[in-house]
Image (cartoon, rainbow, N blue to C red):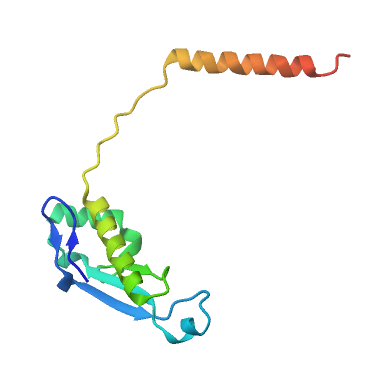
Length: 138
């Protein structure tokens, strides 16, 4: 395993990460019944070297991946080898944490311009008129 680099000088040491293996599902013949290729990476959110505000962001944005004990969990079983799945899980965990602590720009609400609304309504009227002219006249 390797340390996680979350950017802005934030490094999560590999000692905080726990990896567990289990048998993977899906195709693979006899290999899938014998080899534990699925890798689950876990990290305790409270132990992360982040500020309280950043930890709150992680808890809020990754709530679906954090259990009641406060452990963030990522699983990978896409590859046939345990090593490749471990690398994928570490990379995914790094991406998730990096994205969760990123400061997002606050959206400034805007309104649809009046000219655009007018054009849309005119186009609807033209379309309705075309369809009306196509219908049978009685």
